[in-house]
Length: 129
Image (cartoon, rainbow, N blue to C red; front, side, top):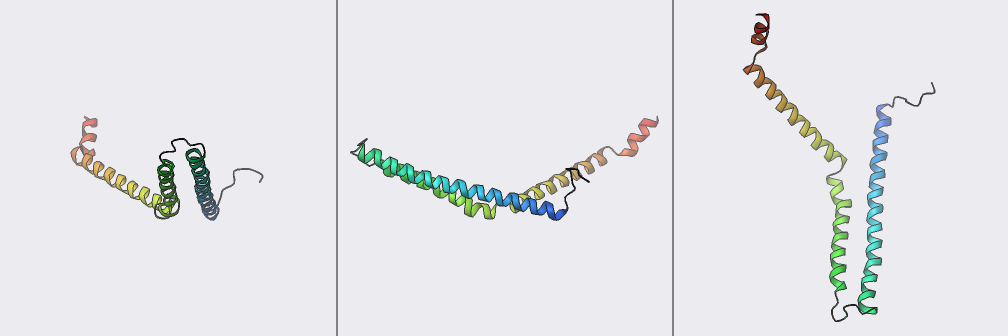
């Protein structure tokens, strides 16, 4: 009656899974936005170091640093918004089911091969002797 281990119905498990997926997506987006803010602050810092503090002032090296960092931000955004849609939980589940089916098929083939090489009737006859 008051136990903590209640059996969850299929609907509750599905809702729990949807909630976990939503929380993971929120974490991914939050990390992306944090990465973008750090990128902006870092870019301003690189410009200040090059232009104001005159570190390597004869060459605008900050452009290369900002360009590379922007490329990494784009890859991160692509991963969050594009890749996750195509390779999300459903894709992982389908791949896992496909691999399990292949493994089961291979196990069945091996069992059939073992049964043809070493039939149980011959093994049982040897035990009787």
